[in-house]
Image (cartoon, rainbow, N blue to C red):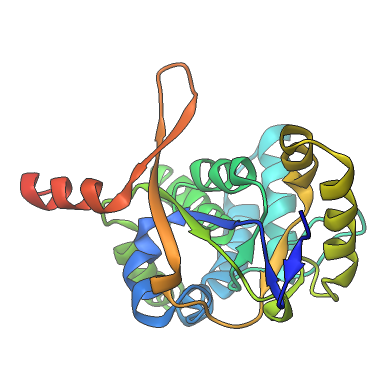
Length: 240
């Protein structure tokens, strides 16, 4: 199967996040609003890192987390190719990759995940923060305090010209690589190979062109999908 026909991908792309962002995505389209920037999450993370380093002891595991948090504050791509830029919407041909991201980051964003980890670590140890930091944090704390579930957004026929490589470069090489794999492999191997091939979305995609699912984790830690509309109707009914 040809990967791109009439300028659009013939395979679906996926975005994993939390339904904390759902209302914004519906209103502005996927990639249409940068809530991370609006809420100054990366700026707040920088403040929290400084306070944690000055006020808290940390073990080897915590040191690793702090190093990742510092890289997020720098908002770049590591020498190993790991993308630590946040605020844009990212898409992947692998539903597994998107589902894993959504279930690994309970707030739907890696940047928010680290902000909240540091915030609650300080709160648990009764470390006060300066007023300027608490003022920045308050809207974000209220935003993340709402009920939330991980969701998967599935997009069909995405225009190739609104995609960049995850690191911000041209998507042509990724598309060519996917095209070659598509011709050479069966579906199972193809989508396994796609797990690290991600795109940055350059223009908003209206939600009328998307399917949305709740990601459900079983007791055996297996992931499955349910229609998101049915889930939200139930939550409204029971008041959650």
